Image (cartoon, rainbow, N blue to C red; front, side, top):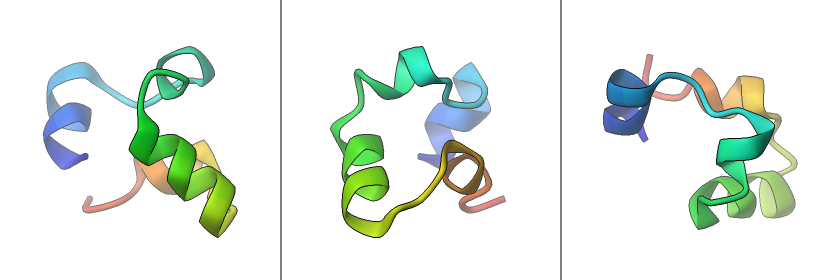
Length: 41
C-alpha cells in the first residue's frame, strides 16, 4: 500500500474498485478510503 500511494497517489472510488486489498479493508474492517490512504504515513 505505501508503495502504491507513493507512486500513484491516493486511492479514489474508481481506483479502489481494482484493488482487492482495499475492498477487503472496506468490507471487513469498515475502513474509509481516507483511513486507507493514511496507512503507513
